[in-house]
Amino acid sequence: MIRAGVVGATGYAGAEIAALLMGHPQAELVWAGSRSFAGHPLSEVYGNLRGISGLVCIDDDTETLRRDILRLAEDVDVIFTATPQGASSSLVTEELLEKVKVIDLSADFRFADTGVYEQWYGIRHGAPTLVKQAVYGLSELMREEIRHTRLLANPGCFTTCAILTVYPLIKEGLVDPNTLIIDALSGVSGAGRGAKIASLFCEVNENVKAYGVTSHRHTPEIEEQLGKAAGRALTLQFTPHLVPMNRGILVTGYAELAAADGSGLCGAAAARAGVLPQEETLRAVYEKYYGGEHFIRLLPGDDLPETRFVEGSNDVDINFRIDSRTGRVVMLGALDNLVKGAAGQAVQNMNIMFGLPESSGLELVPRFP
Image (tube, rainbow, N blue to C red; front, side):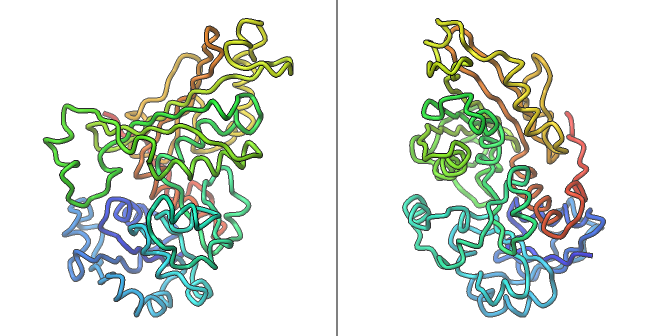
């Protein structure tokens, strides 16, 4: 059995990890940390765990953890850190990594350049010397690197959905990456469990709003990973929106298609010249990358992704449409932001890191309605 500890186990993502580990046939949740509910049973904080978990939350205040983390590491094989930005980089040390593997759900180890992290998050990085050994944990795209790492940066929810949705066409050069625009819709749980005015029922209900316009922190994360796919740095437009639902992310990406004849034409010019790639070509590319993936469902024909059909699962639904009038492709993806967008992918990465089947503990049928 893999023995696991969770820092931040009473936040939405941390609680989802805890619940998944309780149902995992080859893992055991040994301890669960909470700053706000230290000393309280986890099942008291989350009533859905009544009769399932008898764990009492330990104190994971940052100062307490700095003192106790090496001792806590003696009891586990992996630690999940579902913490605010800046906390993990103040806790993770070389000494800790010699004892235990760490899967971090914050942004602290997602960027190759700590300067980018510090610019977008406004926080000084606490462990810049460890960044180079961290692996960006997009399970389907970084599988081999994940197998051999001891420090994993679990991707953000928007980034997971956005990157998986557009990656194949960027990687194969079928679109002009400089024309890429990504819109995304997210449920309220993506904002976390903390009390915020913007997340109150009366503020969210019967309303849709854009936020983080031109400044959302997932933008450079998406740019960095898709830039690697394109083989060059890229700049894109990313706009998230908050919608009144508990869970789910729907991404819509737009980009100009590159001409199929190698002429260099793109978009409307390629459409006017009649040299746009055909749907069969694009579908074959998606099949090439995702056809054998357990958690990515390439939807057929006219079926388009919907958040309700992935809720509660580790699945990602993807499809696309070619707009022959504008010469663009519209790429769509949907996932559950707390499962594949956070906890589920973290457990999937744990499975890879410890040589288990990726689907272990994650055979979750989407719940509907």
